Length: 151
Length: 156
Image 1 (cartoon, rainbow over the protein chains, first blue to last red):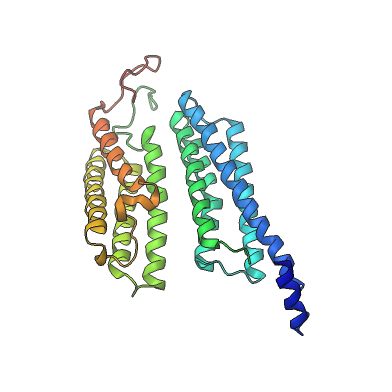
Image 2 (image 1 turned 30 degrees about the horizontal axis):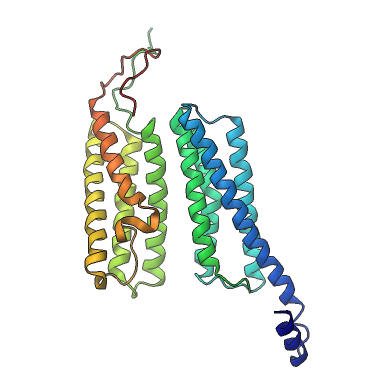
């Protein structure tokens, strides 16, 4: 990859284009890492809330703080995604679809948290667990939509 | 004088609470998912597979209807929701089977293709749990007279 990039730089007289390429690739790796982090966090949240369901307990403050953390991660993913699209990345599944799923991913866990605050039983915790599983599923779709190659 | 009696509940059956609230959440999720998907596909790529997209739109409509009846509650809403869950189950089974037997009818996936495999089979699980829950809710007395301390033996 390094060889190919450097040879392209020599061949191309338009030197202004080349500095943006490494930056872009670095940002692509950030997106991949963020997706993995969000997925793991979502599944941990699901397990944690599932545990509360099994113990017949409603969600507590710590569950809601956990939901907030997962939401912030999903929000960071959306922001990085927007920055990368602004830098010229074309999601293979379509830009509109990517943004729709990324916004959905941000809203999923807060919606589950809201429902778990209304339902102060074990079933509220079950909703929190479902929210985590749904977010993890959304992350799988986001990876597909974003496309394999980071460039 | 007795404006608020703690033992007197509303005569409405609480089909949207407890386990029902989980169903409300999932039906809300699928209303949004199927609805936004079908609206986008009907607008952006209608000619690719109109039948598939109209089927997704129909699924979204059924989900939305069940969502509203669950939230509203009451005996008539419960019966309507039960009927809609029947429609939903029939839809998943028919479309799921057709998508395997005659794939040429569908040029793109619907929410119900392959029994909802694209959605972790939740489209198949949801109507079944919905029907079970709504049937169980029918057996409950209207103004739940059970004391809170008594554990319910029929807890699923």
